[in-house]
Length: 458
Ligand code: GLC
Image (cartoon, rainbow, N blue to C red; front, side, top):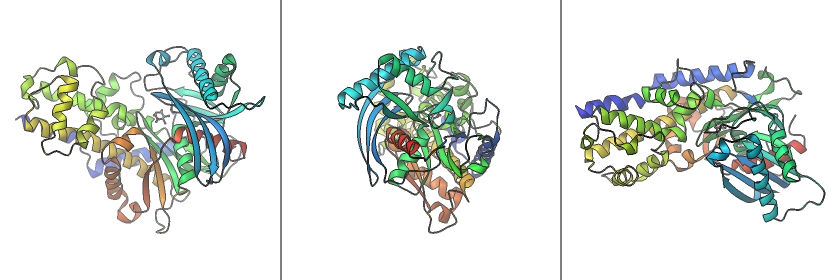
């Protein structure tokens, strides 16, 4: 009985070929719709105003900031040519207090962090202002290479006086108040940073993906297809898809646990695709499923149907626990005992419990890899004939992927590649490379600041 309750529950996370195809078709439709929509509620397919990728030969010194969901990184980036960079980087945690305070306090703090970097690298340009590229891991409506209005901020941010304001004004306001001599020359989404910086080292890169707390992607599109773009003429442009915010109930295979995550989130109905895929939510999906299974006596009989307090709070089951458990190759999955004892004070697991917990975690992790592969396939399809040609046996298309889930989750790349092969077929999939992209934020921002000054942007 317990086993059948378990199997019937876990099966909901296994996607059939038809379900995967529906996701690809649904996302493709949204990618197309995003190119022309003027609905302010639709934040997808944002033009970046960047019209070319770096060649790898660029040189110069630029400042960079990478503002993510967890950390702020400040960097001095020396572009050395030949795809080489020298980076001095500092990392600061963005506290809950900062995330939920005023915009002014946030941007004053960013200016302080920048001042600390300048002091530590002893950068003094005399009277000249330093040029900075900014990577922002949130949705922006860009109106120029260095201008963009903040559209929405998930990831636990609730800042006053920021939404709808221009990021360059917000940042430079902080610099002015703190007397820091910096101008913002470029603003990019983190996926654009990943695409640009990975192209610097791997010129066949046509797509940049982030798979971390959140997930999103950028690619190169024909400008003539982007009918909502009203800026200066150009042939092609990098678009920030904001695929996180895509996903309709009609094609997303949401379980009741997915729906629960959405219902209790800060913004229900927002970022439905991301909520099924990214690192912030995977562990929570496992927790909600475990709680339900415990109550229905489908697992952990030792608890007698009672959910322990330690498992009751949102987000306590970290995606990191999933990685730890899947990394353990021992036959009896002993890492599960350790995680459950140390982090949740739960003991007395049977070997069947361990096998079930492992299967649940593996299945939720694999669903994330398959859904990301489906989204990449939709993008490859949309870009084909323009920046991508998978039918040419001599052409490789590289997807640069940054983020803890892709980097640290065991076998994630392999699971994605398996799914890509199922979707695209062996030949076409063999022309796609999934490569780990690192530090795209700061290096990408510095490269775009350079591209902006040398006419690679409109
Ligand atoms: C969220 C943000 C998006 C960002 C992604 C990855 O989905 O909306 O802009 O690229 O997280 O960090």
